[in-house]
Image (cartoon, rainbow over all chains, first blue to last red; front, top):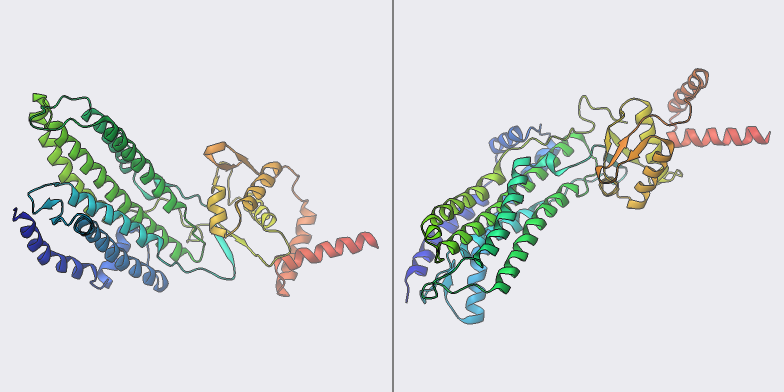
Length: 298
Length: 124
């Protein structure tokens, strides 16, 4: 019996309350001012309330999402198979080290999405107004992040297929089945395409015009939500690439056995950075705000 | 640039949109080459059916105000093909608009009054 899950449980028991306390911390004026500055918006009393609500809710929901992603698979495994495992490491000595990061990133992504979708925006009940300025994903997300998403999606799909082409030593690793690889490649491709579609959908969600300050704040909130989605999506693709590299390192090809561990570790490290940093990066939406000073309005 | 739709107005929403976009183009706020939002975006933002905005864009296209370039969207092409009103008519309209505005009338009220005046003028 392995004691490693017990060590993980102890570490989690100490760190989870700290993470939750940070998530529920009050959004103070300093944080709001910094956020407004990095996103290039001027907060008014009404937009300040909306932004403060979003910042706290999104932090709480992302945290709970990540924690659910970490613990739900363990609970399901315990309920269905009676097997005790934590973050992919079982008491029977089994190890699936990528289960933890994948679960956390999926949960973080779902939390980010729910935070954006469930945020109530003020709506003018009397008049229906809209800005005549188009909203495009490129206004809310840097082009290089979009290119990185596409490139990693293609790399992950190709990588999954390459796993079926390399030879394996039957004594060390089982030969992967083509049906599982093709299914895996299809799932990865669907995820990469779906991620960008989800980002575009977030940008195109209804944005009735209420006041220039509220629309500017709403644009900045959308940009942060899209960045959070992109960050966790990129993290998932990177962790998949890392797993593929580990798979290639287990092959019977000497060059791959010796070289694939380095990119696997780099991709894993980058996945954690992507999830933690991209979602919090300041971004000034490039779309001009209708009705703002200097902009004509009818 | 902000578009407004009054659901209680007697003027249909697609016509309200057409008039406002035309006014923005005539006033120079929307220059030729400026891109308009996708039909779905504008319909979502205004809480209208996609068909309503699509009809408005079609009318604007037949007026020569916009051109649609497939997936590249709808782009302003220029002022409507019909000749602009004469200086004399425009001065009279401005005078009337100022007077109507002073009485507290909305644009719809003023346009209705003009239509009634035209109809009764023809009948007389």
